[in-house]
Image 1 (tube, rainbow, N blue to C red):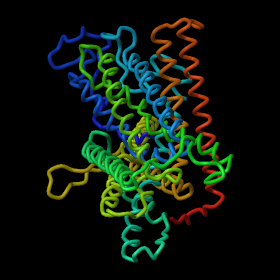
Image 2: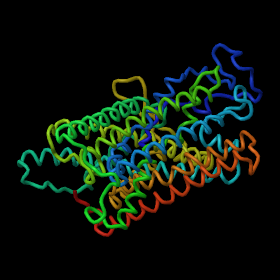
Image 3: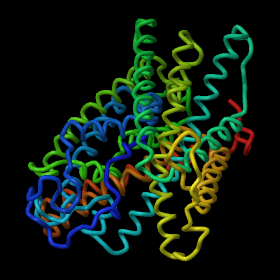
Image 4: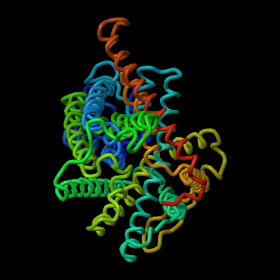
Length: 488
């Protein structure tokens, strides 16, 4: 998934402001926008920064493996294709931020709000289900990735202390449990507003380890003096069987889709932008800049990783560099991955936490266990922490579930591919296309309507293929993995 770590202060909580039913003319207040909220100040550059921060994440680590399955021709071509589709559908989605007039129409503050305004009905529930399923799956994927990076640091130390004689096998479960304990603690941070510092640290870490990965790939290619790999990717008979070649190629599509996906937060980012010009125009420019930058970065990381390792490119670029020198730099990169994923986990899980807690409070408003806030003094501060027992229990159970599932399915590549496959078509293509058709009142069976539907169907086929490849990878992995006893 794309790691997809979004900045946390992208929108103001809806309950804080009373939105006027009658929209005021744009710009009538010096301090307020047309919906009664404080003036938005976002620009093309802040929007681009938000998207780049959200997109560049742990998904970049699997791109070298993805290109290795597809080869030098299809690999970069597929990446260009995904970047184009992502940009085009982002343009469609940005047009749906406002209903009706693009300058004075009613605003949609979230992705689900936009679906409710333009499509409504059962599709709102389907959108919510897919969103929350993807967020839950992302939490599982991040737990797996963090444990692999923690073990890479430990194995690096073990390998060098033994002079390479000890294979340094170790169990992943203690590291997943350690990550889960950390997330239980951080999950008690009540909401997005108090997570900004964690998200900022996570963003810096993501750029750090991605840059190190790219630098190591370039250095390894320079050291070898040649580019490894082939035009068609992993060779049948040498590394994989014909069946494995097909499934791995499909799974690679999901990995690439995961790395590019950010549609789930596009509307929230657009809601930070000032106007005039219209938010849609600003967002289009921001999307073009950010998709161009991330595509260039991704292609460099993926291609240099493949050039460095060839058909044996690892599923996780940083842990797959093995324990080559400078091992301390690999340690820094893997520590950065872990720190980043600690914050990313919280950012992606906060919407689920908020949804469940809001629904529980509305259903049982008189239940003290759900609604009561216990004020606990913070030593050395005049402030206090609001402890909510329902939040404590529910979030602890949630983190425990993601940790247990991670120990059952410790396959970074296949989980990333499956998440990308599940989220790409509905969230990046289907809903933006359908909302745009509704927003612009495009006649059924017109040339434009047919073109948009063809795009949607083509992306659906790609998503199904990617999901099939990832599921096959999970099934294959389960044949050899023992639950709760996975070693590396």
